[in-house]
View 1 (tube, helix red, strand yellow):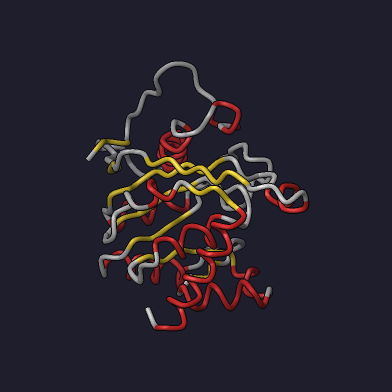
View 2 (cartoon, one colour):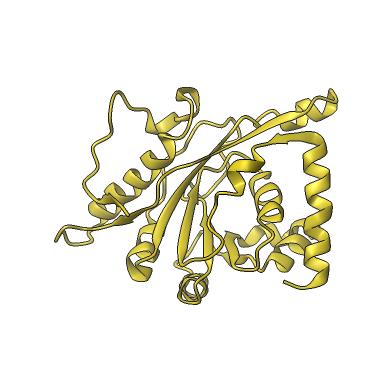
Length: 223
């Protein structure tokens, strides 16, 4: 990571610590090297500009929809963080190749399986694209749950600080147990990954992944 990127991260840390109450001690517990896939829920634009500057780690990268580069600010930030653009409307082999290459290099890849922002904080159905990457890389998966900042803009207008809560789960691997990676199996694996995130969230944020009692996992196995 070059000096300009580190200076940018320092500036963003100042900005967001001024307007948000961030669980900084939790961020410090995120591993500093991979290969590791960090799977997160996606509420709004805040996750990347809060998480990545606080990690301040050149071994961390992520993926984002290619349309984000049309916004000059996002383009500036994402290029310096070396975010991988992905075409959500096609099978983007280049994004897949770059993501696998990052994991092969021992990096940490942050992904949002919902594929879009929920805006109100309630989890949306996960998309199975992440499963192929998980199976091809063999990397451990770390679930991370975000909540508390869906009203960020309203709070900012009222000069109120916004809670930015982060919860870390336990790393796990995916084992298919001899099942063929059919479409149904890939969706089942995706749902198990999403339930791992949902378990970290207060009930009102679980959305599509509400559950009563313990979740039964077939494919997700703790490291």
